[in-house]
Image (cartoon, rainbow, N blue to C red; front, top):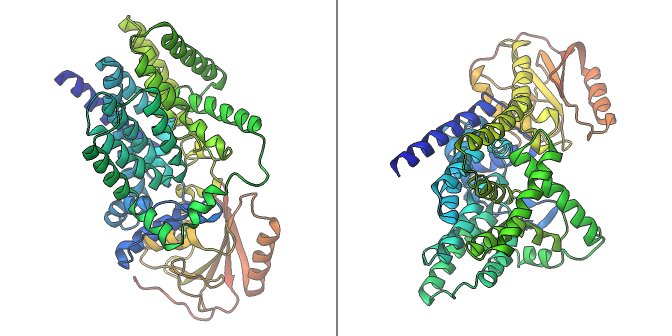
Length: 509
């Protein structure tokens, strides 16, 4: 036992180092959603503005995520002075901790410590897990919370009564972080039926009800506040023009096997599909052929295909649509690999999985989290390079910035970035663009006497060229062009103010 936990400690440390190397010093995505959440999280503490209502889910103004992710971000942002990379490291630590959950889960499911070690090793190197560890967005934490929901259910099935309140708590927390995990509610009902679980005692039922109400308390309050508009939006979501069920099913299985690939073998999707089909076929064969261990495998089968319940409301193009799937893939893979009797062959298989996944992690470095398909301009390292350029080209001189952003006219990213990064240089630039509403008004309005002006352009194809042209033409009216520089997705054009009169050296703020 002691040796197994020593091995687990080593794997956990290794997982932390992989995640650190994948994001350090600034390889993360900071787009509008991230800036919005970072602002909101800091506001809770700095302005003592406790949040109950979370950000809207997708484009539906009536539907809200929970606020758990905003509170989740508070400790690292306060300790790190707003630097997003501190939040990324905190997120990476929680992500790495999920391998402990996988170890305990696999050991309990298969009554085999070796299966637990295998699950932990795969989780530590999985490209999918490592990519999500560096992404600051509410779904990421569910790689930790959703397996705990299923683990709680499994413990309840194993006659550990505390498992049901545990499952209820992490069910609510998972929904807080990502609202589409509402599909876990019918999943729980299915598990009760197929595993023939005994009804809970009144005491356990009350504890479970308290646990889920506590973890969902802010979302329940939000629904009451807005007259249950979110619930009505969910109930009406089945209406309107949608692809056919079979189109959704085809898309689902494409994403399903793509997730297999990203979790186990990211370099070759075709091979990963073959592995996935083999694992599922073996699972079904074991269920049909052998009674021994059948409940375990049925449980895993329900876990594996539970995201399919979302097809009732249609599919989603987001790369995180099946974020509930990778833990189940790893558990199933650990079950299959644990059947290999030869230690040499097992070590070879695990070494290949580690090599392929770590190679994908290395190849994607510098692109933020490539799996999430970000714009090139959204990588923090490039944004920092652009800010350094503006400071270095106007050392100690007053300067102002304008920006062409996505979404247009909302200076979220640069308002946040300059607001924490200015300490390195001792002063902030001023803002040339249109008036910004709080919290995006961190840069003071330009006075008109700044010596240098910088136009920062997001080069995403999602911004029509006319907006860049209009911003450039506006700058030509008030300044003379000096030079421009590109930072792989971000263009910065430097100008000298025509109305500049006297040198104004800035003192540290």
